[in-house]
Image (cartoon, rainbow, N blue to C red):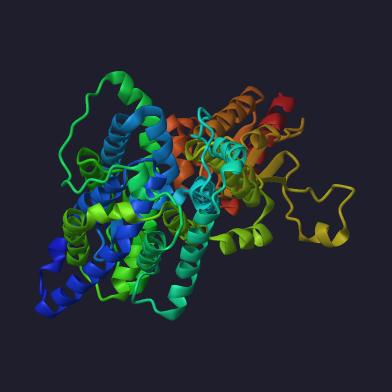
Length: 562
């Protein structure tokens, strides 16, 4: 049944009770408290101001909850986009980021309207695991500077991850032990708090501890206010000046953002489905993600997607409808107006510690190690290559090369599943007696080949390996195990038919399945072969061949007598 495109919010109003609203309201407030420090930290990791992270959580969070295909999805800035956004901002500025994000939103909407939600499953698990682990490593490398209080040497490029490592090594002489103390204490708080209680977000406690340390202890540490201008202004609508060249340059980044947003959001929806026992609408969710990203960009935000950790927190605290996500966005709006100036007190090592934990939670290192131990060598190659390319280059290169390699390895693997076998004759000298006894008696002028597996461009050369001997007058190809046929393999079959026709050999096909029959019929090959030579099974094919052999023998005898 085709999945309908309809926001879950519309379904919520049927039978929605005041009791459930109270639960959604509380869950929304709790999630907002969790999202506040994360949104600020992720914005800074993305190379933008702290308020941009809040804008994203407010605007995209509200729109995606209102229009989305999940009852409990919470959206906002996520770690997956941090390195991508930082690179775009460094190269193209905020205008380039806005254009890339709007285009990504349009792509997501189109994907949803054309019902591409189900196609995300075709991205291999090894690629998603590889680039997720790679992104986690790049986040950690990007935060070493603030965690250790290092100042990059002036003039050194720090866009790519490798450049950041070089700059960190060059500036290690500026190491600030005070920053390390604050960062280590906050990191310890983040590790210990979940073991004490999950009701109070560890990131919020870490922020408070970090502020108190810098305020009341003789520690010289950079804070957000030292490096950024803090604004409590409401998000304002802004359309950048756009030209064709800007759009052309932004398209590769837009596709990367769109694909990553689709993967992250639908993965989060699947996790949420398992927690609440419901099924999301993937195409509706893609449309909502697109609309949310367009709105976020136009109101000064950065790319957004479904956040698994915040979605899980929503479910655990009683959220069961999109109302909780909308409450989360409104709560953050109030926090922006009232408390944003105090965000300038947050120490930069605290932000680094929060991002270290985000990176650890997203890296899936146990899954990564397990794949290395258990996966086939080809899958391990894709996994490791995607991981390395994400760290050394960027996500665009990693996904492109990872997908290309995965496709090539898949083709190679599938080509190994297709086989061509020739039937043996009872008169062959190298046969054992037991095997000879199992063989069926057929005329020597009849040759039988059997193909098993899909016939596609990767194995079309198999058809060229069919040997036609001098005595062969009828060639039977058994195709009961051929479930698909592409145009390259069809051309090879057509060439075989032409070769047989020139030599006066009759080609008979046995048990042709529906898809290959459709392809051959559309190309006219079945008409050339003749309906009488398309047999439903091997017995009918041999019976047809024997009849033709007898007719040919009789014709030869008549010709000899004449």
